Image 1 (cartoon, rainbow, N blue to C red):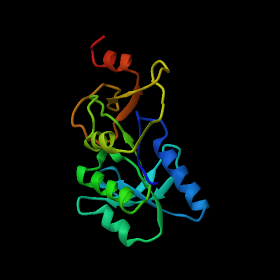
Image 2 (image 1 turned 180 degrees about the vertical axis):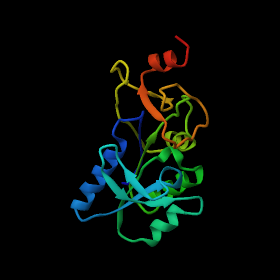
Image 3 (image 1 turned 90 degrees about the horizontal axis):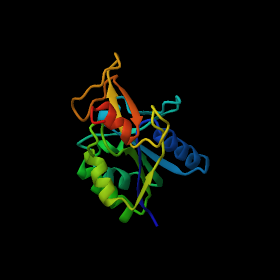
Length: 187
């Protein structure tokens, strides 16, 4: 049986490293994998972990129909998608078609919420529709309790706000709820 998985966490939990480890495991078994990443997260089509692991991936843009692409490419045994929070509703439904019709498991990895504690669109649909939802644990960068949220700082370490999607060189830190609200002036 094939499932659509959503593996999520706050920043720095090892989502990308986990994805690349699964890819390595399947490759060692001589099974064909498909790595995907939304265009907004990688203009050059590479999935790169903070540990320095790097693999080429197919870019998901607005014109790609993932279902049709996979159907044409035979022998794919698993699909691994990084930065799934940036997927569109259309792409999520294509992934459902892949798991339900083509019987290929799909593992999506991403953030649940942004630095404003709001769900990303892709995460919203994955939380609603995925067969299996798995949280990867990470620690608060301030107190080492379980981190469930992210805060965003600029290079001068000043807390900043702005657009939900911001792939600049800002600093995102995982924090617990207490420190999230403390940083945002609620405590």
